[in-house]
Length: 204
Image (cartoon, rainbow, N blue to C red; front, top):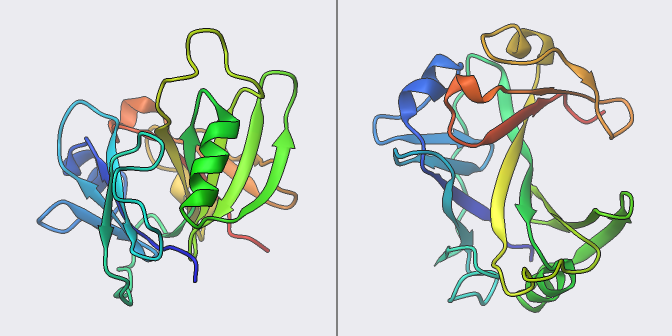
């Protein structure tokens, strides 16, 4: 059984997310696919994540604050006015890719693929139940950074109608994504979402 990404806590205000076309509940929860984005207010950034007890992580995952909850069936996501329907992938940045890969594998994640994107970037791909986890970092730790923790870096969402979603304020023009046949649009920080967000067209 793959672990499920139950929730991701953001240090972000609900109002900008509503203005960007997301359905946000009164308690600041924004359900996308089977995962809640918990908008707790603050100056931006990620505060941690919640995963199912399919993994035995009680003290965080390589420095990422981690809450474990019992496995359960998620309730359906509401329809978002901007046509976002799912989380495509979450990006985890690390100063030590080998260490983070080992930590995730020890917690029950399966490393599906490793890609070297040039001399300075290595990517590793792991699977939650229905969300991709992309780990990015240098092939070898840079001097003085090996002991630094991993951290959540960004999230990419699936928009069923990418052109309509990108027509809103503070969203860049769609362009070809690295995945063949897909397009991506980056949300500008001026949108005030508090974290790095990108929108992608659905998988074929």
